[in-house]
Amino acid sequence: MTDNDDQQREVAGVVKWFDGSKGFGFLTDPDGGADILLHANVLRNFGQSSVAEGAHVRAMVQKTPRGIQAVEILAIDAPASEPMPAIADLCSATPEEVARLPLLPARVKWFDKAKGFGFANIFEQKADVFLHVEVLRHSGFSDLAVGEAIAIRVVDGRRGLMAAQILSWERAVTEARGTQPGGAAALAKLRLVAGAV
Image (tube, rainbow, N blue to C red):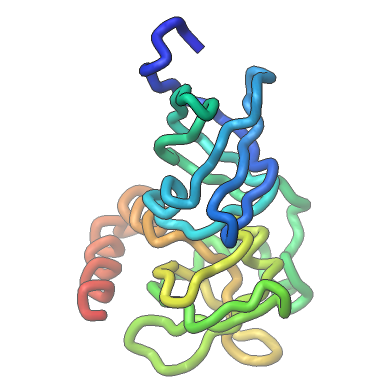
């Protein structure tokens, strides 16, 4: 840090651990300093209620009387993993095929981390979509809150509809804006559907 402790700086750290029930966790400091506090409110401002251990986080940090703290999340990338599906149900789809699936706006109906699964509902549809804890981890989450807005890519698994990828609402909007074909149209559709709920 510089002599001016009020200045913020950007860091790219890795999530050491995060506990949603405690409301905080820590990032490693890429410069080898003390761990960086990541408060749940800062994570919520980014649009996520949790983050997976090992996820890569770009954040603005600032020195405070309690140490260095993240004050704004700029980006979260899922933990590095093997280029293989999160669960056996997804073995027939390559990561490229999953990435081409449309992002669908959804809300978490319920999720139980201890059981390892839960369900979400796609906006304006009644069918439940299965959420597996390993798909969450591969997507950069460690847990989901009831009612949390997410975007999902869905496949028809052996037991019905299941999420193949889960994104925070904010990340989905960013993706729809820039990287998907018809980005502006996709963004407008996400906003239109979200506004109807």
